[in-house]
Length: 135
Image 1 (tube, rainbow, N blue to C red):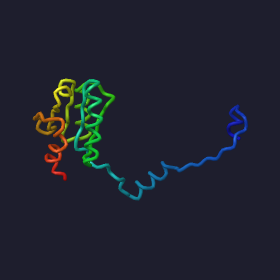
Image 2 (tube, rainbow, N blue to C red):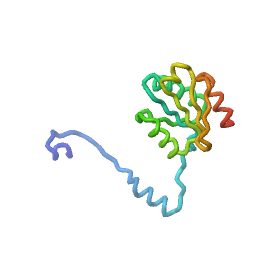
Image 3 (cartoon, helix red, strand yellow):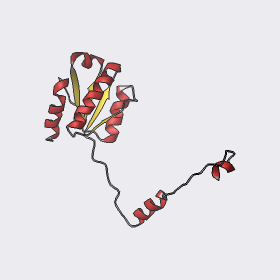
Image 4 (tube, rainbow, N blue to C red):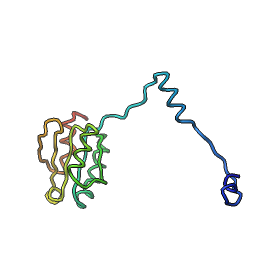
């Protein structure tokens, strides 16, 4: 009947409401802890179209290795991407630009110390696994 009331032809329908706000309010009043997302270990920053294409494959490799990686494909500047990495608390940022993509390398930046190192693109998952001490 709602569709007809809004000017359309009569359409059969059904609806439901979950009352999410009430559920959240009740959980807070009972001091129930909300589940936390695991910490992001790595942020993948990329600059340029070639780097973006290569970073998709790299992202897939990290996820297969069960290493949490965040990215921000919509942001274009390195400054904006590094800012995002800092806000989410990533331990390392991997920087892949056009030059690095062509040379088959990637920059690993330690977000705590600010130190950077260059590794081969095909070795970065193994290198990060060592750094994060994950198996």
